[in-house]
Structures are given as structure tokens and as C-alpha cells.
Image 1: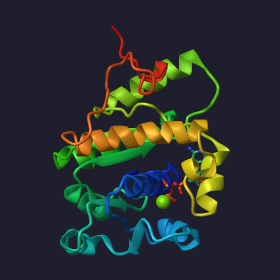
Image 2 (image 1 turned 90 degrees about the horizontal axis):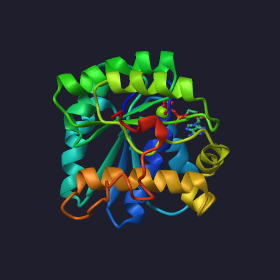
Image 3 (image 1 turned 60 degrees about the vertical axis):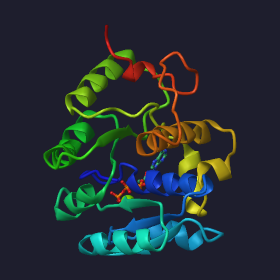
Image 4 (image 1 turned 180 degrees about the horizontal axis):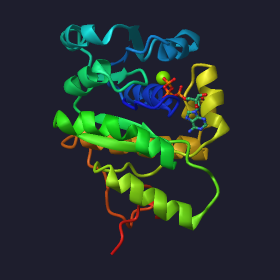
Length: 227
Ligand SMILES: Nc1ncnc2c1ncn2[C@@H]1O[C@H](COP(=O)(O)OP(=O)(O)OP(=O)(O)O)[C@@H](O)[C@H]1O
Ligand SMILES: [Mg+2]
């Protein structure tokens, strides 16, 4: 999980995807490399043993990844600090999929370009996850935002995650939005993101319907390609 901009939602997305993987039966661990230890705070208030989470320096990631895999871990989420430095590069180097979390605004998209550069320079697979999108509709802003996001040059996740109080409330009590408000819109969009990520990582295990006509994964207007 990368974003050289702070507060985009890296930790929120990290803990949700880790919990979704654990629920899907994958032995999952969160590597929290951010000195703020936000994922650890979520883990501390969470009930139940899964997913595991460990605080560690980015420099220890390689060894931790190997020892976790040897101990049976199948899925590791690396939460990183908001900086375009060596930590993010080390996480990207070790990741099978680099999620770059960005808010859909001009300054945020411009700022996150350095994270995209890190991923592309290393030749790693990347996916841009748009988080905290406004609930309202503004066609002009959407078209401009879409153009800026496309200029980043990595695939965009479908759907976007909206700014919803449920995310903050769920994380504050160590839960996911699915656990906190089952069947709600936050649970649905996060479930769709998990399907996209799982599809990218375990394509042979789980076939994800990427047909634009399908209901659950239908691209939002923001991400519909022109022509
Ligand atoms: N989709 C969302 N809707 C509403 N609030 C959100 C959403 N995603 C994240 N937030 C809130 O935004 C703030 C920042 O989120 P989070 O801590 O996950 O970001 P971060 O990128 O990990 O931040 P940092 O760069 O400090 O590590 C938190 O208060 C979180 O609850
Ligand atoms: Mg964080």
C-alpha cells in the first residue's frame, strides 16, 4: 500500500483487504512499516486473532516476508508511511501488487505521481485505488479528475471507494465496514475492491467477472473509458 501523500487511506484499505483475505481463508499478516503504527492500533482494538499484524522497519521486510511464508502465511499486506522514500520502494520491490491509494483531487493526484513513478521504475504491477471520493456528482470535475488519474499511467481500480462515515466508525473499533454495517454501500464497494485484488493475485483460483456489463463490477462513470 503506497502513497507519498498522507491521509489518503492506506491504512484503512490495508486493514480491510487483510481482513477480507483472512475471512476468505488465507493466512494473512499485516506488516505495519509506518512509525505511526496505525494498523497496529486497529489490531489492538480488534477482537479475534485474525488477521495478524506486526510492526517492523521496512528494512526487515524481506526477512519477515520469507519467515512468514515459511510459517504458512499466504497473504501479506504491507502498510507504508506517507513518504516517497526507501521504505515505499522496498515494499514495492517485494510486493506482487502495489496499491497506490489516492484521493480524487488535483493536488492529491499530482502529489501521488512520485509513488506511481516508484512502482513503474521498479517494473512492479500497480493498481490505483481511489478513496474518499465525494458522494455528490459533478460531471466537469469528474472528467478532469479522470484525465489526471489516467495520466498517472497505471490501471485504475473499479469501483472507487467513497467518503463514508462507516469507514471511520468501523476502523475505530477494530472492525471492517462489512462487520460494522453488513450489506451497506461501504461494505459493497470494499467487497468489490477485494474481488479485484484477489482476481489479480490469484487469477487461476478465482475468476473475476471484468465484463463492464456486470452489475457488481460495473465501472463508475468516472472510470469509463472514452470511445
Ligand atoms: N473512504 C473513507 N471515508 C471516510 N473516511 C476515510 C475513508 N478512508 C479513510 N478515511 C479516514 O481518513 C483518515 C486517513 O485515513 P488512513 O489513516 O487510512 O490514511 P493513511 O493514508 O494511512 O494516512 P497516513 O498517511 O497518515 O498513514 C482517517 O481518519 C480515516 O478514518
Ligand atoms: Mg497509515
